[in-house]
Amino acid sequence: MAGSDTTPFLSQADDPEDGPVPGTPGLPGSVGNAKSGEPEIPDREGLQRITGLSPAHSALIVAVLCYINLLNYMDRFTVAGVLPDIEQFFDIGDSSSGLIQTVFISSYMVLAPVFGYLGDRYNRKYLMCGGIAFWSMVTLGSSFIPRERFWLLLLTRGLVGVGEASYSTIAPTLIADLFVADQRSRMLSVFYFAIPVGSGLGYIAGSKVKDVAGDWHWALRVTPGLGVVAVLLLFLVVREPPRGAVERHSDSPPLNPTSWWADLRALARNPSFTLSSLGFTAVAFVTGSLALWAPAFLLRSRVVLGETPPCLPGDSCSSSDSLIFGLITCLTGVLGVGLGVEISRRLRRSNPRADPLVCAAGLLGSAPFLFLSLACARGSIVATYIFIFIGETLLSMNWAIVADILLYVVIPTRRSTAEAFQIVLSHLLGDAGSPYLIGLGSCPRPGPRTTALW
Image (cartoon, rainbow, N blue to C red; front, side, top):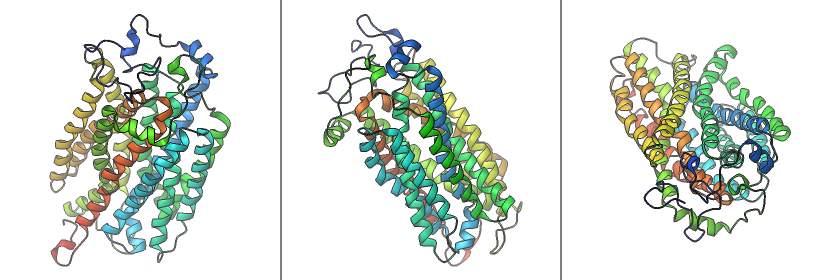
């Protein structure tokens, strides 16, 4: 590594006793200027020799992983797109509706460390195939639950966390084993485009499929079929690359995994990992509550402004706000992720701390705009949408950069475990509770608080 005066902020080994990982670059931008005596970044031919995969095949693997990531988030937010209809069907209030997301996130959070442990030690391709197949079957089954069995809907949404945990903890580590430096940053940005775009498509698919079919249950039957396609693509296209080989610039000798407790101790002593994970927890807290409740909030704002009639029992609720919010989420996701990666890449030339600074600026900058979106809801729905657009764009700047930080401060044999515990932390203190807290606070009480304005 370079001397202390030029060493990037996030470049230390993830365990002081390990020392630097041979050939591991620090920040993505810093490795382009390797010092004398440091290994060069492998070119295309070098990567193909190390991984055994052509550049086209590696790019195809990333495309398959992006498709599945998009599908995961599309399924997660299909429920939010038809939430008013679910409330009508099961005759539940906002506090119970908030539990739908909280139960899912809690299950996902508990299972993530299990798949993180398995992903660092066993074939990642087959773990993902099994998890996504199970997720598809459970999601399909949840669309046939009768109205008197709301508890069963909660159970099935919890089981959906199996598929998400098997994928989210493992897929980024595959990308890390296929690419290095700026190539990895670009591929991760493409991969994380799928989060906001998939979320937006979830709102859109949920609302439009419900309108076409005349029944919200059909909205939950779209993603299972696409999940079968995902399993086939995983099985036929994805190949398991050697862990950490592209960073060692050699396909031998392999890195040996340490014990699970040793991994946890190393991660706990890695300040770059812990601090970036805590920062991302704040992002998860905000986006979790915003994602579930924004369409319902916007619908009630229109009712208060007299632009749409209230959603009455037995009637189909208006889906226009879910559609518009979905489109905004797609657009701001693409814009925010791309903007964050590009700003960080350019700023890194003069400041090696660019990644955490861009993340912090995006998170802090989003706060006033999201507050203004709430404050303007009683006066102008257009202003509300504008401020939501700006706030979501700034929040989205974090997605790809935080993932890249994790990959270059954690050694390859601990990355799935690190992904898992970042998921646990961000959900435990973030979006596992925030949707329920918002629903609990907005749940109607006797008296004047039963109005849409309340």
